[in-house]
Structures are given as C-alpha cells and as structure tokens.
Length: 225
Image 1: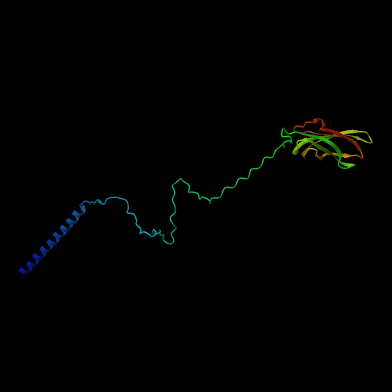
Image 2 (image 1 turned 90 degrees about the horizontal axis):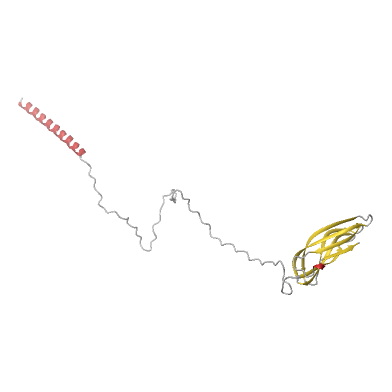
C-alpha cells in the first residue's frame, strides 16, 4: 500500500515539472518575438570602385557574350536621331576651265575704233531660168571682219512679160561676214525667180552694226531679164 502511494506521488511531481518546462518555453519564444530588430550600419567608407589593372604588354580582356545572345545595342537619348553614317569622302569635281571670251567685234587694222567699209557689189541669179537671187558683199577695209553678223534687206519688182502685170516681194536675211579688206562673200537671198515669165529689178542693202566710213555704197540694184 505504501509503495503504491509513493509511485503515484512521484508521477504527479514529474507531470508538474513537464508543465513548468512548457510554460517557460512559451514565455521565452514570446519574449524573443517582441524584441526589435537592430540594423548594423555599414562602416565601410564609400569611394570609387577599384580600377582594373592589367599587366604591361598584355591586351585588355575582351568582352564575352553568351552564345546565341545578340551583342548589346547602342542606346541614344530619347528624341535624338541616331548618328548618320558618313559616306566615304570623294574628291570635289574639278571646275571647268575658263572659256575665253568671244569678241563681238574684232579690232581694226589701224589700232583705233573698229571701222570697215562694206558694200553690195553684185546681185545675180543662182540658177536660170528658175532659181533664187544671190547677193555679193565686198569689204573695202580698213578693218578685218571676223564672224560679224549683219542684216541685209533684199526686194524686187517684177513684170510679167506677156501681161505686163507688176508685183513686188522682199526678204530680210542675216549674213555672217569673215573678210579681210578686198575680199568678197556671196549669199542666197531666198527670193525666187523665173526668167521665162518675168523680168526683174532687184535691190539689196547691207545694214552694218559697226562704223562704216562710206554708207552710200551699201545699197545696190540690178535688172535681171
């Protein structure tokens, strides 16, 4: 009877110890959760990152990209267009050589103001009985004509050989004269003729645009039958 009571008391005491240990464990965990966190400051001084050092004579390490990944793209600020690729420089074209000025009027043989006496010295049919009239112009000097263009007025009065009816026609032409003193040049007048039907009185006048010392011989007329 005494041994049975002694065992019961021993079991009851053990249970009380276990309960106390559980209570202390709960109290300890609750106290740990209620403690504030403590942030440890970083005591290391800020500064520039350490520079990479390469041994003398060794090339810098190349950038490596993972296989299958495109190389990094260049980034530009928003709103600015990417820089244009400059085409390879080409040498500028060479300027054309200067053209010599063409004189509109050649110098005179005497060294003063340009002067030449031109005159109509002949009018003749280029072909008979049908064709057109031609005019012959002579340079009497003293100046030399070099590609000088002058107007010429030609006209005729014609009479019908059978009916005696009369009619007239005129033509304005421009001729280019290149003649030394004493030389002549001939030009077609565009006035047609037919000596089988008509007889003509033809006149031509050269109208120089330079100094002509004798304008009285610029006009000439001739009958053509």
